[in-house]
Image 1 (cartoon, rainbow, N blue to C red):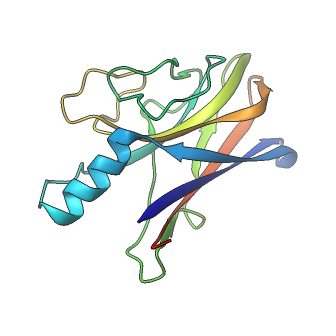
Image 2 (cartoon, rainbow, N blue to C red; image 1 turned 90 degrees about the horizontal axis):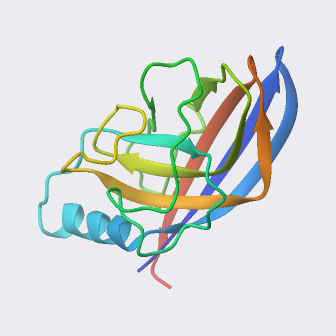
Length: 163
């Protein structure tokens, strides 16, 4: 079985689209193990997954984990907690949150380099949650500058296939 993921990031200012970018990403080893363990062994799933931006110029690796990753999560947005990845069940071998994008309003100048899907804690910047999962992560081809008032809207699709 193969898994693949795709982020779509859109940046708005005053309701107008400033830029849009797509990131093909990797599902981490921890993410693959989490998917297999929750579906095949009955491991309890984390209650919520979250979409997060990161501010380190870093290319994610399959070996990265929630507790040990090479990037720093950006926390320069108004929302007090991480924004949830809200999905429904599927019969199409694919999940996405296109109906419920994760939206963040930035409150200062910040350059972001990539995005990730994490689970475990809603606390921005947390990496110590014992049940924490780094499901997936990816880096933009070029960094993205955000300024106060810009809105970052994130969607993520994960797809499984038998080939």
